[in-house]
Image (cartoon, rainbow, N blue to C red):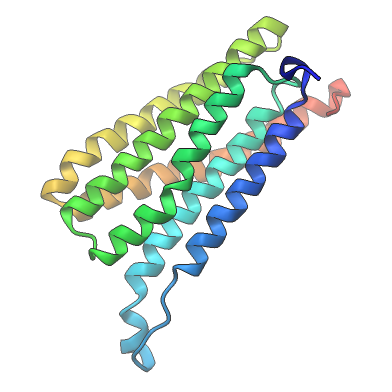
Length: 206
């Protein structure tokens, strides 16, 4: 079977498997407190906080990737390789999550965390563009895609700004990373609901 005729179901299933492994790796990196009581637990709160942020970002990408795959029924070579690039970037998040925790949120590790966020967002942007190209070819491009593309660009700008800020004030940069996650969290699920509502009246199935 030619790749051009393959269903996006295969791409989505493979990506889901990789994302499941990524989340598993992050969970396995969580630390058990050595001390007792609240004082011991407080020692691992920074680890839990960066894990929560990274988990939120992976979850947001999973939701948006799911919706992105639903917008076209067939894959293309650009989509496949853009997806692989995005998964590669996403797979580095556990490493940088561990690194920033190990270095106690210092300036360099916090800046590097922003770099991987830019890389992941950039490769996802390439995937989005390849899907948009496919949509335009099939005449299924939607205005909602343009709005999400603008939000995606704003997120990348926030990350890019946070990197140099991290070298001076890591905590401010971390707040910017959290702001991006909050920006996407509710709209991601809201978009899912809207897409479902748009699909059912048309009787579209995958």
